[in-house]
Amino acid sequence: MQQFYFDHNATTPMAPEVQAAFTRALGDVFGNASSIHHFGQAAKQRLENARRQVASLLGCANGEVVFTAGGTEANNLAILGVARRIAGGHIITSQIEHPAVLNPCAQLEREGYGVTYVPVGASGIVDPDDIRRAILPNTTLISVMHANNELGTIQPIREIALIGREAGIPVHSDGVQAAGKVRFDVRSLGVDFYTVSAHKLYGPKGIGALYVRKGAEVDPVLFGGRHERGRRPGTENVPAAIAFGVAAEYAANAREEEVGALRDRLEQGILQLVPDTSVNCGAHRLPNTANIRFEGIEGEAMLIALDLRGFAVSSGAACSSGAVEPSHVLIAIGLSKEQARSSLRFSLGESNTAEQVDALIEAVAASASHLRKLSPAYV
Image 1: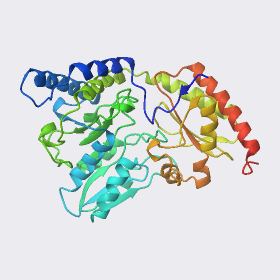
Image 2 (image 1 turned 60 degrees about the horizontal axis):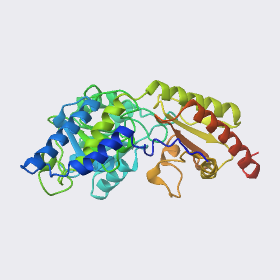
Image 3 (image 1 turned 45 degrees about the vertical axis):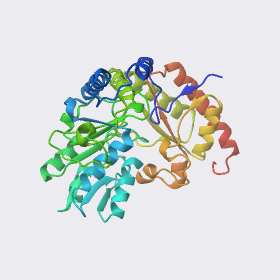
């Protein structure tokens, strides 16, 4: 049975050129980039070239890119590294953030900091005026994601960054889902900190980066050597950084419009063939993401049924797999627990085709029909 992948928001397969570069680097670039001999300087040169490639994707200076072990570490560095500079401060974030933002904020609350979780409503989009109203005299950081991982909704980061700038408050955005899917540059966004992760844009796992605007201040949250300009200690993972750089160039040429057309084809096909379905948040969102609710069907049951037919989709954030509670994102937009549990996320990527989409539509229709016959919740 053929297998088709429609879960690119969870992770992406490495692009062939990225995998080739990574494999070569594992054997050829083994030097420590901090060493002054030939092998170390060769590694340093390749590391800085990768930094340049990532900076080009983000639209920033090379020195503003700090390599980390992934998006989670980059988020922690931005949030904890800024907030802890002032004891007892206040942070503003949204209710639909990824756990890599929510959990550092929860940790700060345990340490005595205040956190305001701004709602989003049915649109799945933060109202900048809510950010403005949440500002307190001791607010030290605003952190709002660029694009939501479950709904795909794109947040008004430029407006939020402007509010932060006017109030003298640094702004961080988790851009893990946006980078490589929509075109932007961090300078026009106006943020002070921006998170990216290689494995979300056809690179390897275990490598990410934090954009730190020149002049912005962030303290390290790990302690060791003076790597990454004193912001992130530890010997750099040069082979992974090299692969990240190649992935950044690959992502810069992503076929955004084609993927968006396939997403629309998928949504329209499912809504036409499967009764009692609806799109959760059809507003401004990533071109690759569709979150669809199937009345009377458990999302996990639908996920398994589709997997048995050869299609990989998701019932929520991969980082929350196994969670008993329904998606906090879907609850935040006003869905009941039952509605949240009856939703599936389809996230397309560069390898998906119209033929795959059509086959998925048929598989969804057949699976929904079968499961509804078995469901006492569906009338």
